[in-house]
Length: 337
Image (cartoon, rainbow, N blue to C red; front, top):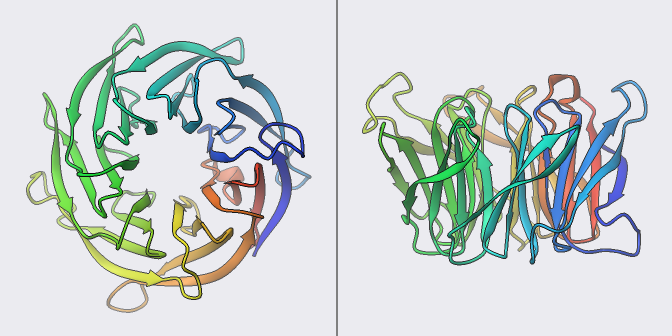
């Protein structure tokens, strides 16, 4: 069902097996960014067509912006910017110039490792989260400069990831404190809209929305994938715009966490990566009264932990998945339906 069509070393050489933390597709689907323990951000081109042999070619290496491991990378929706978050407590924004990305802004203020940084759908806001238990909202002005809009500390432990809603200025955060939090802009400040404690047993590592933004999946230390649905979808009231858990699936025969989850916006297939080196696929069945999470199977693996998985957002390449691993590789996979 999932066929490996390429393997690429983040550092370029087979003997360089430095951990790869994350990959992220440009919204056009032809460019990929990767980051890892080597303190570098690399930008890759996807070469070829779906009906021919697709492969990645490294086009840019940015290795002078961070002093410690780079934990996450994300592109802006207009495609002009790239952001990286690092264990050195800084966030760097790169602007595209003549086809290459170069450092434009360095955002500082977090007191500890920054785990994630991601642009909102409108690109007006940038959300960051950290080991310092905080979630920061940065606002971009007409000159493409960033200033702090809000700083919230709704978690009691390390915040692992922040994820934007696909169409709205709504954010969700995942934490070591076993909870998720939802945030909304009230016109002046960012506020915590909903708190869901005990979401998983142990760390909540990752979350992903479906294409419409009415469903959300989370994965955690307890090797469980959980489905949340939005209640009162048409409600304009923030108090009534709430989420509830409706289904869960515990992966058997493993004691390792699920570290990453990604929801395909074209075919609705969900992929996860985890500490047992395996990539799994899931589907949400709605044939019964209550939704059911169906496990489609283990469809791929690395030599060591799979830290991140992500589908290509371009419908033309929607069957492509990339995975990032402790074994130093980025692997390119094709879903065969």
